[in-house]
Amino acid sequence: MQHVENTSPPTIDEILSLEKQVWAALVDGNAAADRALLSADFLGVYPTGFANRDDHVGQFADAPTMSDYKLSETRLRVLTPDIVLLTYRADYQRPGAEGWEAMLISSLWERRHDVWVNSFSQDTPVESS
Image (cartoon, rainbow, N blue to C red; front, top):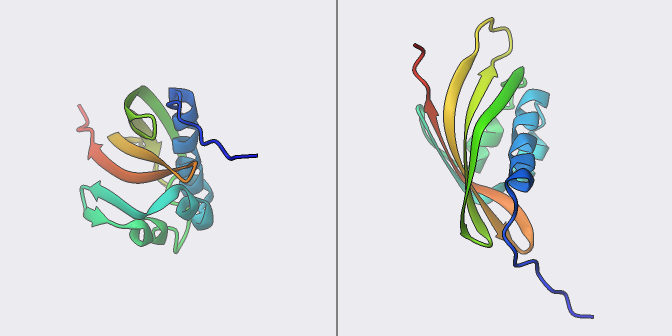
């Protein structure tokens, strides 16, 4: 029997589920789960500068980096059946913080060898009003 790869584009719910797994890893302090979701050539563009996969996973060295989060205003742009751009607003709380912060996020997901991986992310802080 021949293996047939899935060539239909994903739904927003499928990609949002993957994105939430990245957030869950941040809350749980699960570096292995985070690494598994990011491509080897991952690039993050953050207010603090550029980051690769090791930098992203390295933030778990001490403890979880988030205590709670809410994702809203989600949009999915299908570039090809195997490359999609998820954009959304993330409201989040850091461990020990009383207040919430917010970012607008663009997250590029690519299907490689029939597995979805996050290859690019850009976080833009939302200025508090």
